[in-house]
Length: 112
Image (cartoon, rainbow, N blue to C red; front, side, top):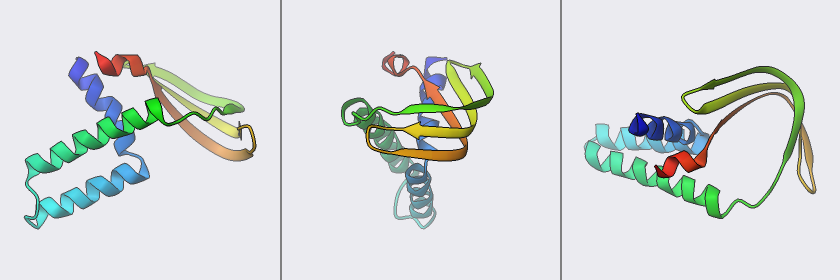
């Protein structure tokens, strides 16, 4: 169960633009024989660890979000919120977004 949650949590990072580009590139390298599948998996695991570390140590910005809560759910220790007409505010900037999906999980569970 813990391993499944651990991998599902990292799947969130892999669905980002940079995660998808990395996965596509690794797939191409494996298909043309430049990289072994085992080595590609090791690279993905290192990517997951690097993203987690960067989020924990490098990101210092805070943002507030207001909007109409369209949908929310809690499944396998992961919250999913879908907001409509959201307003993101930071110290020096604000941005309106028509629809946004926020997926959140407890980072303390990653260390277990």
